[in-house]
Image (cartoon, rainbow, N blue to C red; front, side, top):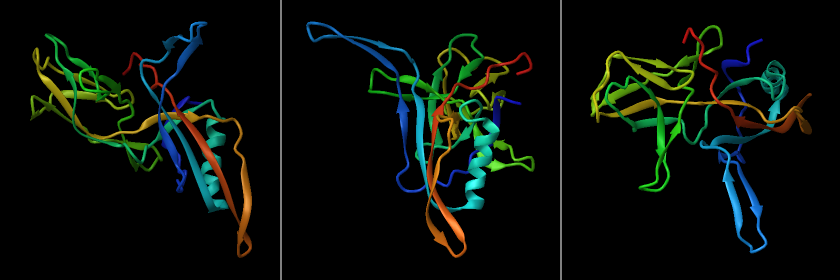
Length: 220
């Protein structure tokens, strides 16, 4: 079984959705009331809590099937953040001499202290006949002009140029993106709180956490 699948969970987000970036910081309090703080992650990771409310059993089955397929917290899949899912002319690199490979991302943080938040899963919510997500159409520009001499690793958000863009060139990108995630739970509870005709309607929630992209192989 594959650890990573290019498929989306059909989670039926309801009002009450919660999510955003998360970091991990170790804090040791000192006797003088100061603290020793150590940032364990250089990149934030997405966390999401998705409520589903008054859904029918057929809709819940879509969620259940993904949970069973991924064996709870074990396997990874795709999730589209409904708040941030499109980039428009986002600068992601200033090329160095001879450089051909670049990590796509979005600069975040306060002016003068910004850093690149990497973007990995460059997929559209459109799916093919096999149920897999279609690669997103990504546009790369070099100093504002559209580029064409490049290939994109949609799993990892890496762009590789056939020839170096040139020292000091500003690279930007536009397109849709998603996140690699896993379930942050090994149980999938639900409650029966209502009934529609002869059919129960169900309530519950799904917790997801971002994970790194699949490792690069020799065939990538």
